[in-house]
Image (cartoon, rainbow, N blue to C red; front, side):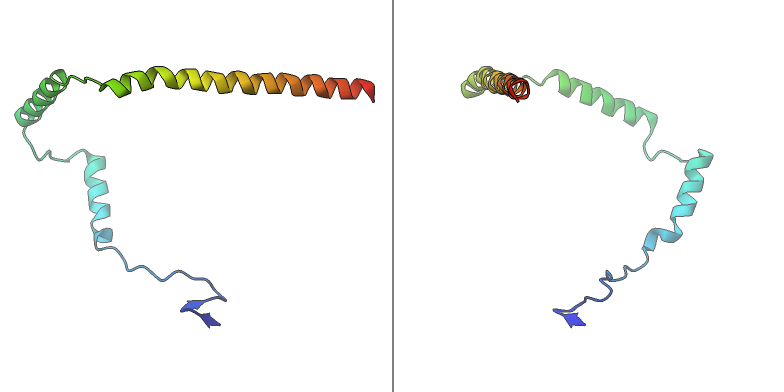
Length: 104
């Protein structure tokens, strides 16, 4: 039965074509296992890039805007309020259940 272009009896997904890289993958795996993988950049370039990244990280200074400073202080208090409310309700439920079991 074919409804809206789908075959309901089998619900098969359309077949995907084979990847172009399927023939290359075994060769890449073999190179990696043998350790013959040659880097594309020199060790000097890698070291220089690491120094640039370290310098950039040292120069980052974050100044929160005033509305973020106040927000950071208010959120934990609001969460604590819900925690106390939930804990109180849990204690009341336990007391009510023990009372109901002892009366019955």
